[in-house]
Image (tube, rainbow, N blue to C red; front, side, top):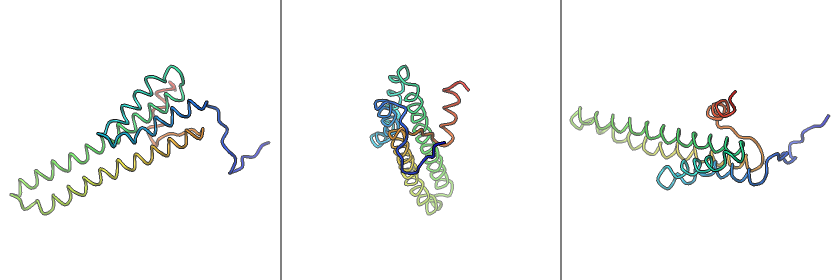
Length: 152
């Protein structure tokens, strides 16, 4: 019987190239700073080029792609709905609603940046984990992608 000690390095079952590609897929979230979709495109390219070579890399690239796309869509949707509602509220109240709507719209706008930043930090954590040879799954998305990807 062997015991796992907390400070022992993980058992690496994937090659250095696989770990690097998987880490790039997760770390590609950094490219979202340039236009919002750079990381999505990078993860898609990694998935398309690596899916025949390594199922592990393909899984990580696909879940990174879906996580980044979901984060972007959710942020744009929330910010968009609040902004459209704020403009409508201001218009309906003949400008008086602006006192409430504009500060709320500004807070939600910066909240959108905070959500994108938190998603980026989470992606960097995933990149670190897979580069260390550990498995990583995004909450909700990882299990869903695994079920679809593995056919289970």
